[in-house]
Length: 281
Ligand SMILES: C[S@@+](CC[C@H](N)C(=O)[O-])C[C@H]1O[C@@H](n2cnc3c(N)ncnc32)[C@H](O)[C@@H]1O
Image (tube, rainbow, N blue to C red; front, side, top):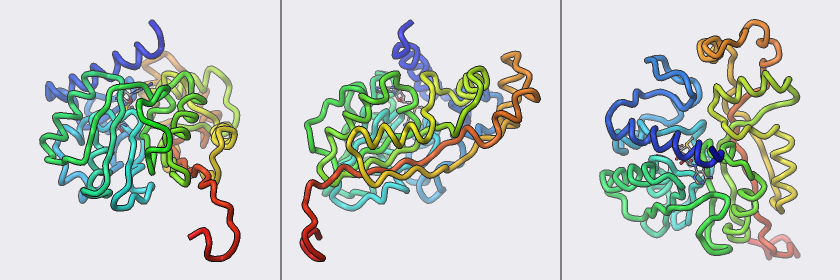
């Protein structure tokens, strides 16, 4: 099956589990839903954020960070969430940008879009639009968005360069890229990398942090920053990896400090020539 179809099927089933009420508040990784708490997707949002959201939006959260907090959204801004899933970050963004702003959620999976639209209805938020499409081919015009956010989705794309180019295209000059994603640090033997990324759920593989920064720079972004938000511990993955027949103790030393979620920030150049202390304000 083509990679995209595997991803679509996986997240279609995840949306269905939330709809059926069978999803426990855990996990994006292939293992976990055994009552334990998933270290990747849990505790990402504060109770002040979740209390105003429909329970299904919270249960459908499959991210690995909280990009809306880190993106510093302002009233009146237009936000686009790449791979919006059940819509949690879109609904939170919509509140932050207020009625003069707007939040778009883009997702390719019909079941996720249906769940997100239902969550929007329950939340009673109007400045939101969920759009069907692929993050490699964003169905929005050039220079139309103030902030692109995304939560644990770019790692699922087999064409990450194209996703970055599309994000750059739709951003207005001076627009911000503010994304949570899984990244790796330094080298790890291919079989170790494969096992850990399977645990995290990164079907298409995660970028090494310097590679991510390099690709953003090559796309044209500036002011690039990458900040780890959670470094994964091999013990969190022990049960899953053992179930896959992997000798966890043998690979443990090569995992230490190498697999993490991170917040990645960058800016599309404003195109303004800075000519003096006041002219660029
Ligand atoms: C890991 S979930 C994250 C959902 C959401 N961002 C969150 O934090 O809960 C990945 C979501 O991205 C969507 N997705 C994955 N690859 C995509 C692509 N190439 N284009 C559009 N959506 C995609 C999936 O359908 C799924 O809803």
